[in-house]
Image 1 (cartoon, rainbow, N blue to C red):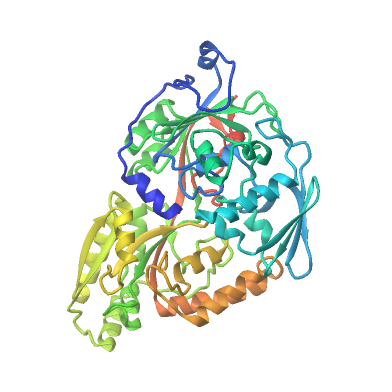
Image 2: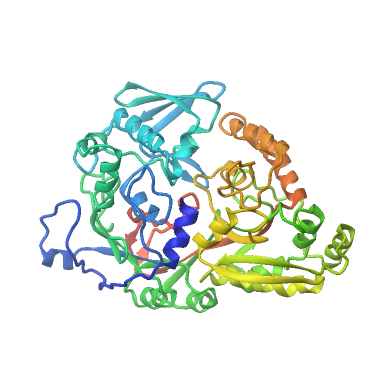
Length: 535
């Protein structure tokens, strides 16, 4: 799952191989090409310097970093944008009155990289395979009861309950359409997964996989027959270059050795904003940092103590010191810009006196207890947040032990006996697709077996509200908002987690490139097709 594997990728030692801009090295592992070495040296190339290695290349199961590859090689029926849903492989769609049947009309003349034409049969096969495999993002298709092919370019989905299927069909994970004719020749689902993970692809996207080394680089070559067509100033080759060292990525983008990157040291951004060789683009993300509070273990099983901790957070200082202003204080559990975000949501503000009052009411007038906090080792932002909390909570007489752990270790600890688990776990969440239900269900819905509800929160009233709200997303957005707000007010009152901040997406782009826009619905993705050479 993406939240797990991102942590894994960050903890691995990655062998770095750097190629000069405009030059492709190494043998192909995928689509055949007749280009000579000399031709490759003069090809128009754009390079994305990325900090983590790839994970898998199976669109049905990939739930982590490889989205940055998949979103350029495959396409969904619908494309999410902050301005609304846009046609992608489907040109239009409609539903019945209660949102339990959705019909999609497919774009005609779309070809897969094999040359096969995309039809409704491919859509049905792709989604049914993802559901059948039941891994990673497969849960997004839970509403589906039956898929019917009406003709080659029309497909109907019958649902078990109302859902906003176009939004689901735009998901960054688990919604890509694959070449069923080509992949069916390979064998069963596992054989297909093995085939894809070797560096092959079966998409309709503007780029094909030319070379795949998950630890060093992915080389993508333009698909000449792409349905969107090509212009002369677009790029023939796009490279995702794995460069774990953020300082090195900074040097490379300034020199033009790579053309776009992200996750650079925030301290350096003011300097980069003045550098004539690069452009710094800052936009809101759909990511949020949480402090999951162990609601089953004393003293945090006491709501008053959890509320006290929430008041004893220096929110403004965190945003300034940790993010250097490149982000905003969270207003509850949902990031700004998404359905379910409410500007007028009453949340906790820094108030030490109020925190002391609540602790005294809870029976801890002088604090006098110790808490254990874990964060992802190597994540400097999480480390700084923890250090600020330690200093501030000491004013309440609370001792905070800070334990850096790799993601797998702290996740395993959190999934063990809650009485032995950490008291506070800091981690990020971003949506599988942009719905508040992805946040609220995964992290706060009652769970028999703990997965991501790492505060062990269980409130049947909250569950009922969000389970009802999601059924109105496709038919009555105002009703959905009303229900989500009631649920979030309960969650904030119960103080199951601390909602720290929403970091901005900050990309640094070399001056030779134009056309880049970040899309929070597809985190960390650079859509290479949108990029052009500056004239």
